[in-house]
Image (cartoon, rainbow, N blue to C red; front, top):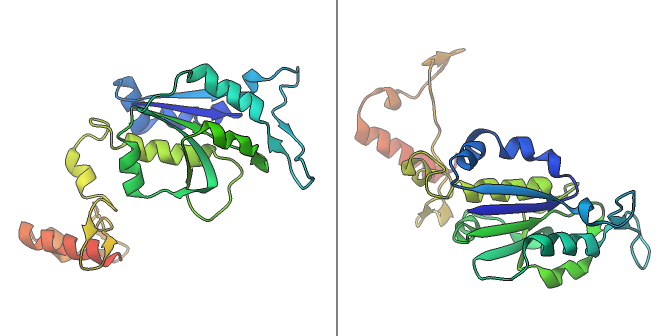
Length: 222
């Protein structure tokens, strides 16, 4: 699966994308993550990508032209296996179901806004908008990284064992609570830390009781 990120700060996430699970997945050619510098499509020596908003107001607005040119440079012909996504507070809130939906595509192209906003005419050149929630960030880079990370984990082979995905939070809908289950609490050595003990059931060796305990904790969301 291929991911592209259009940004004015391409260097800020390269270390993260090349580390740990994502880095290993790229080395194994399971996924490919490319960052594209929007500033490279500017005309002036200062590589200007922002300007004051029409109608007045605070802050600066990311210009449409360099964003559009960057997009067209890497995505010339529209196809059904690719989605162009703008990270925006106006977008659909990201959920695990949305992540699963996105994982079915072969390529995802993310546009990370910055400054006060991005020129609204970008809406004519994207497929959808995604939001992480009702809060404000300084740019769309971290939001894009969160989506890329969550989607990449569902690509076959990226996570070593399929079972690791099956027990994760939000992977199963609980009909009784009408909510998605949260992964049960996990413990490892030492058995006792500052007087805090690992639950006895996990030390019992009784797999059925352990299974029941985990199911109960998963459903309780506590």
